Each structure stands twice: as C-alpha cells, then as structure tokens.
Length: 306
Image (tube, rainbow, N blue to C red):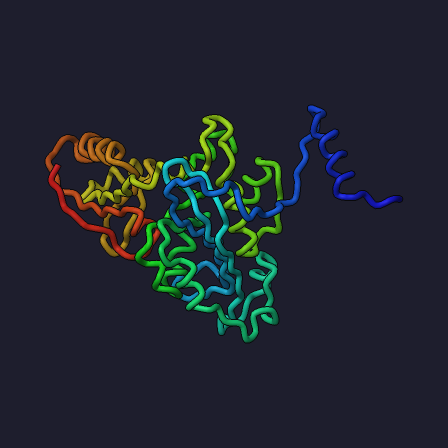
C-alpha cells in the first residue's frame, strides 16, 4: 500500500469531514504567530502547566514544568506572536509512583539528575500581565511553593473561568475541549499542554461566538467572596450542604465561595432569610482578586453585620 503524503492525507480528511456522518481530528501543529503586531498596545501572557508526583501540595513535588510566553491584546484577547517556550523535567528527590508514570509518561529514569532552571523561569515570567493555567487551583500552589516569582502576578484559570458547559461543550478537560475544536495532542506533558491551551484560547466559543481568551479576560476583574455562615443553626446543615457550602473543621463553620458583587449580595440575602430567619447576625468574609485567586495565601478578611 502506497504511503499517503501529508497533502494527500489532508485532501482525504477534507472529503471525509464534508460528510455529515464524520468529524475529523487533526494533530496540533503549534503556531509561532496568530497575528502580526499592528501597532496596538500588547500585553505579555504566560501559560503554565506542571506535572507532579501527586496531588498533595504540602508533600508532593513538581517533576515537569511547561511555559509558553506570548503577546496579546488585552481588549480583544487576540494573541499575536509566541515569544518563547520552555519545558524541563526535575528530579523531585522522591520516587515517582507507577500511577503517576501512567498518567504523565514520566519515569524516575527520565528525571534523574534533572533540574529546572530557576533563572530561566524568572526571566520568562518577568513583565507578565497575566499567568494562565488550565486548573490554576492545582498549579498555582505548586508553582508558588517552588518559584516565589509567581506570587506577585495575577492569575486566570481557563478551566474555571470559561463557561464550557453553558457553551455546550459538556466537559472541561483540556483534551476533550481540543477534540471539540477539531484537534488532538500528546496530553499530560507540560509544554505540549501549554501550546494546546494557547490554541484553544484562540478559538471561538460555539454558542456565544466569543473568543475563548476574551471570555476569560472578562472574568478577571471579578472578585471571589468566601462567606462564613457563623453560628448557623445545627438544623440548617443539610440546607447549607445542598447549597454547596463546605465545613471548615478548625473554624467550626460552613462556608461557600461565589464570584462577583451581585452573587455575594444575593448569597448574603439568602443566608439571612433562609438560615438566620431574618435575624441580625455577623458574618465573616474573605475576598480574593486575580493576585490571590487560586493561591493558598489568605485573602483580605472582613466582618460585617447583616
């Protein structure tokens, strides 16, 4: 059988995808530019991803980092040139389990003697207007613990701050989203995941037609509010659980995090009416903006009577 050239394979793919019963996925071909600079004021964005020895941010270690630096228009979300990329393994000093190797493809032999270049990482993120990760709640604590340079930067999360489900995609995993946009990639290697995420950020959402990155940027000014339902009656615990409140054992109180001024105003009104039966009470709040969102560092704490 004659081997197909890339051109021949593409011609067949186009014929197949023209049929309503088929969809075609293409392997990601990372781009070095999405548009050429046109005089607009551009910002510097950094996409990051980590692979780790596990999920415990207190005891597990980074075994790989991926970074993609690019320039973008903060008003539109349009990406321009890819400025730099970096991927490196690191010996964590503890064994990589077979389960983690199965997920990441990274073995103990691959990381032996390897070390991430701290100076290179610092230089790459210098001057960044935004750091983006797909599940920043996972990546940010690991990166801040290993590289303090990430602490002073605003973060966005393409996993949590884009309404994938509302846009009809049904799930938020990176490889699944890529499939929906017509491409696939070698998942669970950090630098490749970053390049795939940049490609996704430059796609348009299927229902709204909004650029994915623009949708994320629009969410950044919103603040996250954690409200603590102090001294809530014991008999309301199931009602609180049903509204997605979580139990804080050390503080012995229920809490929930919502995003935006309208949402926290509505939440406080619900607490007063449903949990406290209209009584005047005092609640604790913790507020986080993009500089603290997804970090383990505490936000600004306030107390307010309602």
